[in-house]
Image 1 (tube, helix red, strand yellow):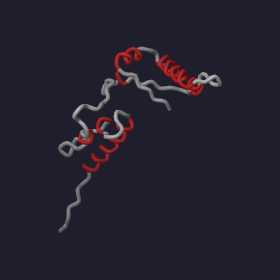
Image 2 (cartoon, rainbow, N blue to C red):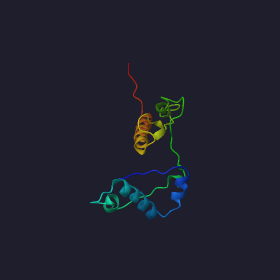
Image 3 (tube, rainbow, N blue to C red):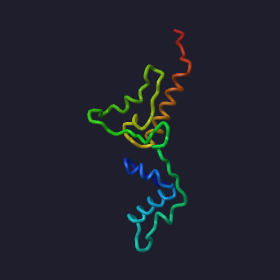
Image 4 (cartoon, helix red, strand yellow):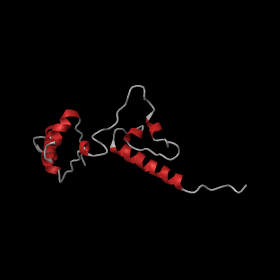
Length: 128
């Protein structure tokens, strides 16, 4: 699996290309970096499929991801805290260690779902 990101104005230009062209161009860059005289096209010859995801076109994402901000050190975990005990946020912005990455979003999503589920369970009361 290979994951690539294109941002800014270049992302807008690349996003207008057919997906096969995007994959071909990415593989050509990898071939240029890792090719040798014995195997000039290692990426292209090894690729057995591709998926292009245009996050800028996604209605809830619009191509955005978080980035560190001056003065916000240590604030990411606070984003994942339950608000009023019933609003549970998740996403790569909530993960202190692996942001801005999809696995950070997935991990915090699983954590938020578990906290949400736990909050919906009946609370046991002591008989004392």
